Length: 386
Ligand SMILES: Cc1ncc(COP(=O)(O)O)c(C=O)c1O
Image: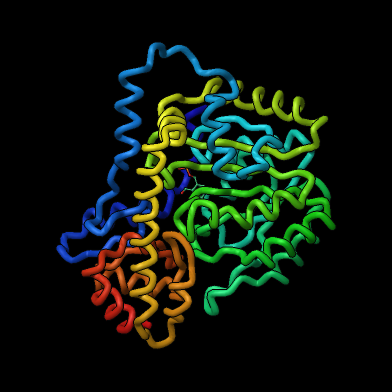
């Protein structure tokens, strides 16, 4: 039986990470990996997180299971961070990272009768895998013109006609991975109208709150959409916003009619129970501690502000450069860590082999991976190939 297993292709990003590690050049540049790096190239633990961990170590009295729903104070605090005043209207459950929340949400949609999930392309490469694993059909929709670095709303909304009432669409709430292209407020409102007209349930993926324009600013579009639709599913990851990637902190929020809340909660509990049973404690406890302690919360906000400023500085420095055919100025206007450059795979290979500059095969760059001192060399390499 097990001897019959066919091997699966490894994640293409792992190939890039391995090639980077094995490249002996001292001046190689890593724009591939999707984690935040500070000006010195490190991914530090935030001070607020360290302080919260010290408090938890001193105060924790038991290691018994947290409840089926997870840490309810964590859920309340994250709910307020994401939805503000609206937070009370949602059913919620803690999840194993944003990925776990996406999977819970897909399973819930399937239980409710959904068959398909629209994925605006290019999407986060894990979205189709999660959708398929939940036995839903991913439906690719045209969304972004990479050459012009522009969202094509007509094409996206047109693709909604290829699914049916009760199906869903995954929309990234801010700091799109891999595009850096976010919807404007006008576009969010147009989306709400288009979804309501067709009975499609929006599934929002929020993984970078605070990395774009600010903690509240980054969820303004999400809130505008969610308050206009009768039902919505929202997967939240706190991996990036708190720099706690390996702690696997996430949550799923669901907006339904009041009568459907109990059934929604019982379905979520059943899905979680048959999967990992109870959620992990530590990462959610860190977030709870930081958000409920005024001093830690301020320290976290300050550090998140510094992360955002660093990303914005790097984007502005890139946008000030002229590189033949590349629309560098548009990169400054984009949000969060990622942008996808209009390069061919052959150009990406030349950057890697000739210049020691690593990005994904689809030319996604992690702007936060670019140290200030490396910008001139990166730009020179782009001029040589584009
Ligand atoms: C768009 C998007 N959604 C969700 C996630 C999931 O994050 P995690 O499972 O690490 O919390 C990521 C992580 O890279 C992401 O980029």
